[in-house]
Image (tube, rainbow, N blue to C red; front, side):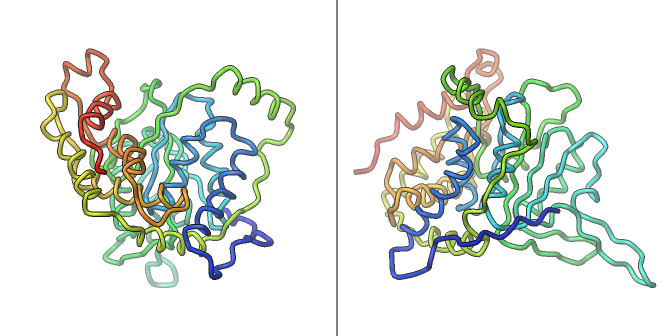
Length: 329
């Protein structure tokens, strides 16, 4: 477990200004810290930040070499909190993640595992067997670990950032639907464009250090305060209906074997509040909901086998649903 060095000054006094302005300032500082190193991938950076501010977890999916792990580490280090990294492997056991009880001085003592941190990076989450993946259910949803009849709560803020490679399936285990459902967002990462590739070479081609230096931009306490403010952002009744309609339409769509659960509605609701705060607003607009809908639902729906064989993607189905629903005015 790694303790992140404390920033000299977060520059975010909790004064008389509107809370959303403070949130937007703090988030922008985090964003700029990451973008000192990461070229492009603006959507990924924004969605990770929204995930944290929504008290959710994020799954990053993309081919090797596109900075999934690096971005996750830079993001974790841009927040002044504890950070741990867990490399999932086929021989990893639940006790290696959660911890275990050891006999010490005549009694059993619980030794906490690496999951007991604020920002947890799980690399190649689909490399561990089902029993290890299943061990993550409670800690991701209830933010606690139950061991030998005792419950150990996680320290807030708590966030799991997980990565997986979609093309190298040898020696991997598909994530159970129940575990996928515990991620607020699933983010698809693409390869950089030509100009971005050139910028990567300019920025990092001559580096000798193994990892860039990141200065923490905000503290864990500020994150918790931001999360409280974001949870109070207004969502009008007609927008609640809009969210519910989008989700319900996935349940009777002819191209889908299974639609999104009510947890998807809650994910879109919370994420739209965070999107509003990022833009400096204390109220949600339909555009916030549209920005949250696809990353919040793409891993919560299951295509019919024939549509999957045709190469239809969940994103395409969701885009059609969004276009078919009238935007509230």
